[in-house]
Amino acid sequence: MDKDNRHSLTIRIQARDGTPLSKVIYRLNSMSKENKRKEIINLLMASLPYAVENNQEEQGKIERCYWETQERLFYYNYLMKQTLSIESEPPNSKIFGAHIFWGDCSTSQVVEPESKPKAEPEELEEDLEPAFLTKIF
Image 1 (cartoon, one colour):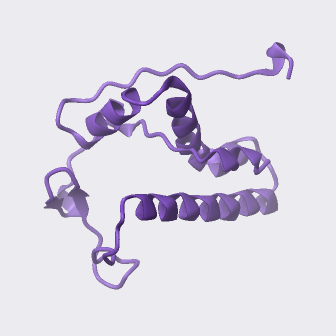
Image 2: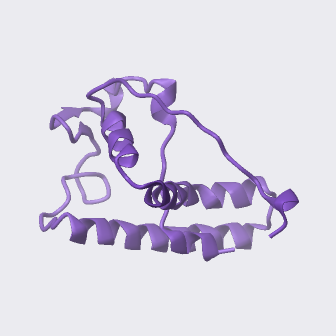
């Protein structure tokens, strides 16, 4: 690939100590540079359907991209569940027939959606990447 055809992203994320985002940042910073890069790419690829839509692609391609990305994210979450030895069922949510709640997994605090605190701008930045997502298009 010619260097003229490359795109880059430089981003600085800061989070208050003790927040869920700070724990993710700590984990990423503890990884090797290559593993950190792969993890961030995997996380960013979750927004590929938005990028395809933003590129004004036809609806069929957007939908195909969405479903392929959804399938890859399911696989990514499956691998996470296996790696962490998660055997329990998910908590109640609209998807599973009860109600949605916002929980801080670091403190087990549950906050109902109406009272969910506004996110700090730096907390709106999220990352995700399985390397296989880069091969969708």
